[in-house]
Image 1 (cartoon, rainbow, N blue to C red):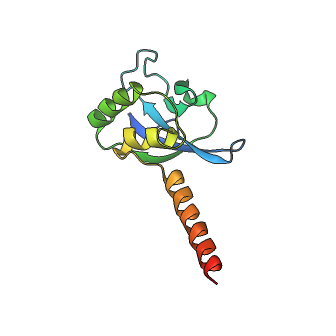
Image 2: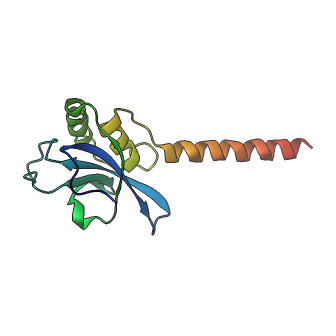
Image 3: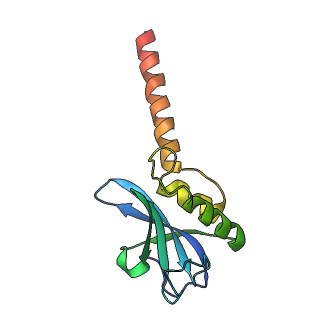
Length: 134
């Protein structure tokens, strides 16, 4: 679970989505480093990409989260966050919650879950191809 006494910063957080069967990622802003007008920074805020758009919640209203990473470049995270807000439309393949969180916090626009699905699909096709060749 996320500690409530984290130092000010921008964090990538993760939680298991029990009803969807997939992982859910978000951005935890401690101290309003992203300068969001709707919060004064007194409570940690979770920003996550959830259909249909980007959602803002207080930490205590969103269930248990685990900190996965911390931004080492607050200014870059700030810029990436506001760019992402310009394209808030959720797309599970190319603009999902993990893409959003990783790009804001780590500067890498990727989804390990999508990568794993692609690899698994390729392996299944390879096995099917081998069994067809016999």
